[in-house]
Image (cartoon, rainbow, N blue to C red; front, top):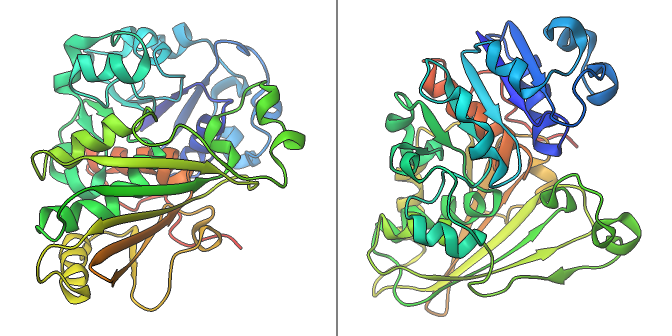
Length: 344
């Protein structure tokens, strides 16, 4: 199998490069960068081993046009939101499977997309045909998808614990979620507000309530299991490189106890290789660092359901989940080439 990564020098792109370079079914890997075309891969993605570098033809980054000419089996776009859809034109409508890690195809309603991202989607004609790439929910649809919209890291952390409980009718009333993220969630960019000196030894909330652009994505998926569902979501930055820890709180429906929540989660994830349910402790980012796993726990306290999750925002929240979707689409074992154990 031949794969290509657009935007290979960003955090998500370089994580994709590492995963695909070690994937047992990827023979050739094209790494593209619009700003560093021609640069040696050994310098641009120094994490790659000699074995990984051997999979990259010529050992250098290529342009997006060259990646299009390469006619890969699977193309991953780790380009910024709004830029990705405009760039992917040459790859769409061919035999190539496209997995987009931006938000450009995640939200099916163009008006909802425009409200979240400040301008209309670049390819509204494709929104209805994209499959939301949350494997634990859309496994069957992903097996035949040619355009996969890989979920955001915050929606993954919130939706994985919430959707089974919501679908089971165990929640009533308003849902509130908070999450703490590592600084890599902002991407690799030259922004003084995200330098080590400004972000070290401090934590802060941002874009609270319904103002974060991932909220419409969450609501879309929540509405698919319960009409009228809504959420208030507040993310926080913390002085760590990667990881997300999320807490979701909602009033419990009548008779919805801890056993019912456990049963809903167990039924949803009995065959999910990357979801671990914790009955006796709460999730921590350190336990899932470097893995494609999401750890989930639950409590029922004073009439409220509390759901907890932890994942690595660069793996299960981005690159690893995209490869997981690729595995399903290409008829491979879902966990093929993906780390299930955390790295201490």
